[in-house]
Length: 167
Image 1 (spheres, rainbow, N blue to C red):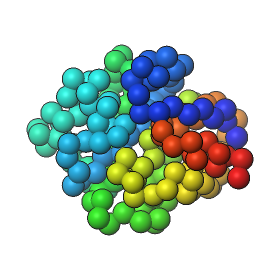
Image 2: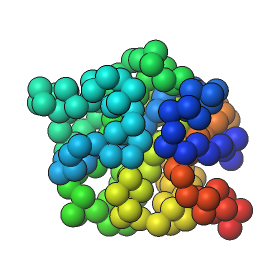
Image 3: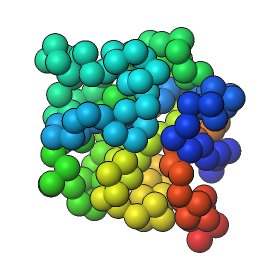
Image 4: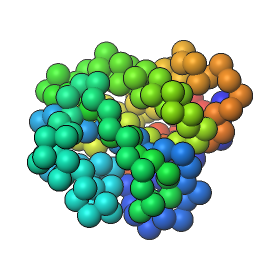
């Protein structure tokens, strides 16, 4: 199990964090403006994600991935993950999105990353269920098989996410 830390959706706290290789934010195909960590990140990036949406370069379609280099947050890269329509979100969608995200992080060699879980930004999944589901996906992923995964930062304001680790 990597070192796990927690951050709220708060730029000041993000700026004080050690950062890492990647920040992962979910993007819905039917939720505008962007919400949660994606919305805050968009604000920090001066509307870059919103502009990409307007330009048709990012839609939030399930499986879509956009990798951006940035120096405006303490993570070297941003991975915007399309998670599809919010109305179709369920446990299966969460598991699929987590597995897809972890596979992409492995492929880009991310040793330390922060993630905002899909569904938490618009209250479609309880924080404890999201944390347990993500840890299960992590245990089944190729990331878990190597000792190189150093730090996982979960971006979520709910205290119950943190308590899910010990459950």
